[in-house]
Image 1 (tube, rainbow, N blue to C red):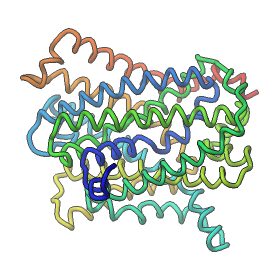
Image 2 (image 1 turned 120 degrees about the horizontal axis):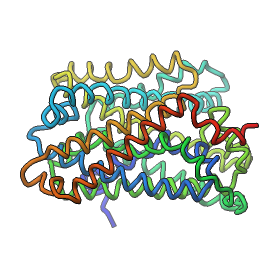
Image 3 (image 1 turned 180 degrees about the vertical axis):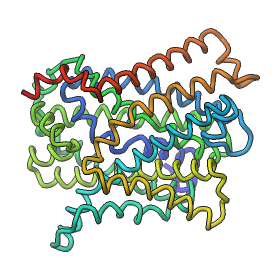
Length: 409
């Protein structure tokens, strides 16, 4: 068994949990609802495919990061491998991605804090006031850097696992296996962009590389294990929700813009499930919020050449949280809006860009990428990621509505 000291100091364990915690977030709460049109089995097949594709691009990202000296973040990586154009693209899409994800987590936590404060005090507070809760509670850990985030993330991941175990213990009693027979594979296309966003853990890699002392073997292991954990969570979460909630209830939640925990708590109407679902939502959002916020803070520090003293860290924290707070204050449906619009950005930033950067690698680090299997893999990731961008454009032009229209009549 791990000693208490090892539990809180082992960097491989910390790396695994940072990858897993960054991945498991608001996307997990949205996935059972977004995939309700397609059904359980088609969604599982797509999960496995996306996990494999994003794992490959994560290794591209890691190899490029390790090929550069110092503590490079994406700006430096893109600039040194793809030149000024790559640097400009990374600036634009990285800010779009991390700001939209941060906004999604802030917006997704609102009702949780409203209900909690109401329960503890008996008083209702305006939703807009709760937007400041996540940054206020966890901004200090982001200020402390990867070490501070790692420590609190371990505690939050323990809470996530415990609340999830409670759901696993009580929900199966409500299973109706007939719910899993629904299948409509073409309807998966409306969920592809959100699903790709849900595997976007690459953003933590530059911070992780520095934290784990550029140990390639340990880093690859942390990424592999850390990405498998969310895949297992996603698949089992799909089973729990899809087997216990009728498809029409999940589609109604989609129309209302609600995460999967809402119909779960309302339809099953069991106090222990409702409480476990709320805790699970809280831990899922906060673990991912920490990873995304840390990545954004490190990115801004690197890109703007901010000094790493206390004034510089405060400036980075201000730049990290102010824009997403403004976004959610003026966009009521920020939870799904931010996630859906992040899909194409993820495909470009975490699919196409890492493959293009890896293509340019030379020396020992680039040997595989210059071989024909490596070239085929790089081209394959670029093509699939480009398809995701196309699907995102079509979706926002309402060109995919016909795939789900029959369920909304």
